[in-house]
Amino acid sequence: MLKFPYGISDFYTIRTEGYVYIDRTDRIALVEEAGKQLVFLRPRRFGKSLWLSTLENYYDVAKAGEFARLFGDLAIGRNPTPRHNSYFILRWDFSLISAQGGIAEIGQAMHNHINTVIKNFGLRYQAWLNAPLEPHPTDGIASFQVLLGLVRQTPYPLYLLIDEYDNFANEVLMSRAPPESPPVGRDIGGGGADRYKALLYGEGLLKTVFKAVKGAGSGLGLDRAFTTGVAPIVLSDLSSGYNVARDVSFKIGLELLCGFTEAEMQGLLAQVAGECELAPEARTAAQDTMRTFYNGYAFGEEPAELVYNPTLALYFLQHLAETCSPPRELLDSNLAMDRGKIAYIAGLPHGAPVLAAILNPDTPPTIPRLAQRFGVEDVLTQVKDETFMVSLLYYFGVLTLERITEEGKLAFRIPNLVARKLYVEQLRDRLLPEFGERAAMRAAVEAVYYHGDLQPLCDFIERRATFGCSTTATTAGRMS
Image 1 (cartoon, rainbow, N blue to C red):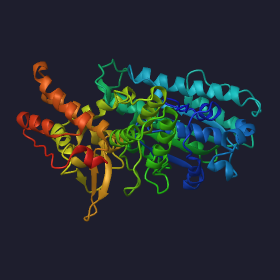
Image 2 (image 1 turned 45 degrees about the vertical axis):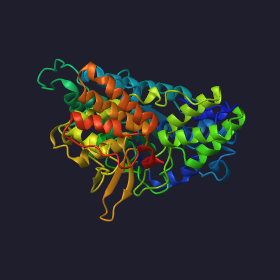
Image 3 (image 1 turned 120 degrees about the horizontal axis):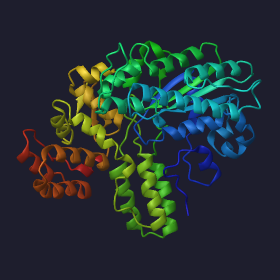
Image 4 (image 1 turned 180 degrees about the vertical axis):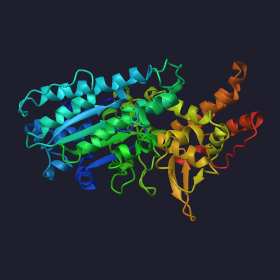
């Protein structure tokens, strides 16, 4: 039976324990050519961590003896670049940094994470270092400087990988945390927004960390850095603190770096169908279900080949392989956090009507350009127009690019039925505060989710709200 790496983002485990792996290593050479310090944005649960793990295993000097085992039959193994297995690897995962508590607690959590990773670095590479690595007990940035000093005494440069650089900062921004007692002489205030400002503005800790990364790349031992995240909010606020990074999220050739193509899904589904001895009509039904619920994402400067959400696709395929039947619940609970992102938009002035308009397949949201950098001040104080909201929903992965109009504008759509359900649920909660009204709404939602029929939902919304909803085109037809 095929083993699907659902929930596994460790390249080494996937390759050594016989899990299915969709080869993306042919992009490694393109990433090398793109620059020294890169930023790559994609929605949550879209394979970014696995890509960082792939880079880690490819460049790690400590994995040189396992190159053939890990990469020999892959694209990069057949045509490796000269830089393979020639770096020390340092990897920070900012999703592990808690956004709970006040500024001091968050700051210390960041220092602790950096210090822990650096301690493990010293243990891993002690055979290559000329002296023991002794981190500062509480200051992660000082420990980073100590690490760089030891790296410069060796022939091997440093490759820094930063996963989910904006994770905890976005959590802070959207939180409704209680106020804390500010330090004497500082009016930090309470709530997520104020804590966010303290982390990023002036000499805020997150900005200081990235200034250290920027400085390390100027001949101090850091040769390359690859950073992943979801949205460009933090990038804008870092400004001069990290203005050396190139955003390659829309670079030609990297559109399919994360996500699965239609051909890849058909190939995997054919293997599972063969193992389960599924009838042709059952295989076709499974394929149609996956395409309708999980496909539809397009990345790049212009609409390219559509890709499947990899987490959702693996969730479906794993269940199908184990039981020879599709899962009853098609929305993976691991994506439940995305509900909060839509709720954030719905809570903005005029947010709910924008969400309702997005549900109309005949009038897709159209904006002049995608907002590629916006700071916390934009999020907190500026008027939230359609460009802002559509851009943020795109980065969150609940809108995707459909086409470029004749006027050169960008037209977006909801990628699939799983994402559409999140919109419908949010509108339900906004329109129906009373429990007794939800039975009729539940039936309308089920008509959308299970049958692609928007008419009952539109009838209900038009009775409850001032914004309209058209169903001239069916939901399933728009996404197939």
